[in-house]
Amino acid sequence: MRRYGKHTDEDDIRQRPNRKGTRPRTSIRPKHEDAEEGMVLTVDRGRLTCLVDDRVVMAMKARELGRKAAVVGDRVSLVGDLSGEKDTLARIVRIGERSSVLRRTADDDDPFERVVVANADQLAIVTALADPEPRPRLIDRCLVAAYDGGLSPFLVLTKSDLAPPSALLELYGDLDIPYVVVNREELYDGGAADRVREYLGDRVTAFVGHSGVGKTTLVNALVPEERRRVTGHVNAVTGRGRHTTTSALALPLDKADGWVIDTPGVRSFGLHHVDPARVIHAFPDLEPGTEECPRACSHDEPDCALDAWVAEGHADPARLLSLRRLLATRERREGD
View (cartoon, rainbow, N blue to C red):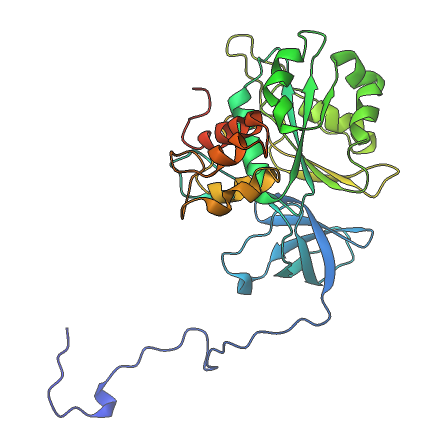
């Protein structure tokens, strides 16, 4: 290693060359005023399929976006080749502000959150009444994630030919959640799709559920011209289905302005990212009673003002129990 004395000549000092040339770096970024607006339909290994007007365009994320990632449902601005022709590639230079986000973590102790869908209006929670057995804890977690992310939830109960829906619906009666009950035969003759379609209209609806419940089959019935690969058979030993949807995909509804987003089957739904204070917004009949709550009240502690509010007759006690059950899902692992 060369050592320099007190009196060095400038010629003796080595200067590391600029590998990127002689132009200095600048923080000024192009405005991309000619960028066109589009919607992300699906993401696959760094390539994003977007809809720009009526053209399907393949794109990649611009470097200046840094770690910010675009997800299905995002409204984005694109530049470059927007023709949609084969072997062309555009560039996403801006990601629009999101009106809602459906997020989850791998587990409750995992701090890394994953945005599943952006800008969806509602969440369809699909669960089978049998084969596989319903998992109320997973439904509760999906409800919390929907309320936290700004989505309106509703239930789609499949395989009613194998088991009645009454027991499961009794758990959610006090939450006033809309629901649709369908059976296997109706999934193929179109009757189920017609009833579910009544809830969709011109809105963006994300469909979520664990594997084997018939979620992708239902989406295929809703959007027949965009039919996905047929769902896998349920494993007779574990009672769980094989994953047949590997990435979220947005599909346009026929004869309507709405969209359905099919998401991969989930086995767990972590809620590490959820702020319990936001869940109360889904209970407008209880929210006024929180004004007298102590600072940072969890709404499930002895000093919570909701107990007195309900005791005075301002709200149904069953609603308070439902709120606290949902809030408890963050501390209670799915499946317990």
